[in-house]
Image (cartoon, rainbow, N blue to C red; front, side):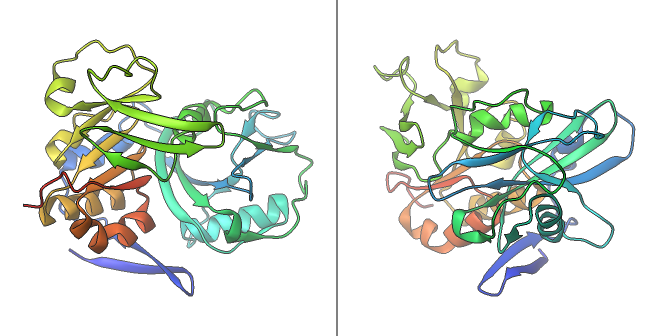
Length: 299
């Protein structure tokens, strides 16, 4: 496996697996699977946070497709640019701020009337940008809370992200008993299937075997628990996926999948011995959250 290091700032190195890694072709195709035969335009967008945990949205200026629609700021990746370089340039041009660092998050393909785009969303924490926001293209901008967005209309490709943004980046607990965290709206609870609280929780954890059976569940969101690439390929239409990591092989599969880009939040759950080795790499490559669960027996 060939790993290429990319430094977005001197003290943080972001790892990207070379596109020739031996992942199943089926997964590579799933990311790009669409009936749209037009050339795929590479686009970056920034999930920019402030000190209060709010996200920055801006409106598309007059003269552009979907003028007046709200989106996460960004733009087209030019020839010779990395995703991060494109993000830096776009935020400077559009909003007059400087991006110091960013982490990959989600990758989504969307067909608009005017273009077929592959959107690379990068996460920018409050201490990873500097400057005063300006409307350099005449656009509006607003800080918004996850789960309480007050601007509309949203750009179609971004609407599915709003639910993902409500999932805390820090989760505690165990898969057997449930996970918890906090977002800008308050407490967030994820409980196992058949838990007494599953109808009132934010999401429900479901073992892959039960998920395959298509069990009817009354819950806002269902998170399948998987353990390998074969299972990953079957859960591509879910809101969020939890990868139960019990050995080195599974840990490296998570690395490979993150390198290809994931379309939904991927949460890695592993015993402390595994988390201590892979936490930094998983986080830098786009894992949404990492859960230390010592009930998972390392194999």
